[in-house]
Length: 75
Image (cartoon, rainbow, N blue to C red):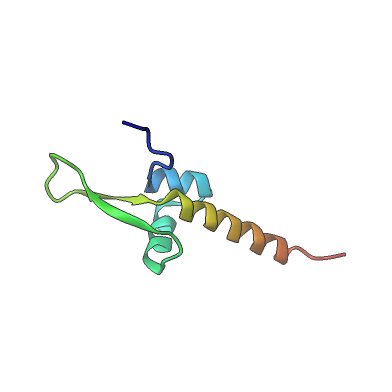
């Protein structure tokens, strides 16, 4: 079996890589800026966790960098 190339990230890992909070990551998921899936945890009825697509995290980082660059004053 091959290792997955882009393992999906938990909300906590996504928050750390975007330097934000997990609540902000959940907000970005709800408005569609990040894509993810909710996965049930085996052996824990009623508990599920969001897994975030790492490609959407890369897109969000690029978007944030572009916005930061356009917000800088030009001399």
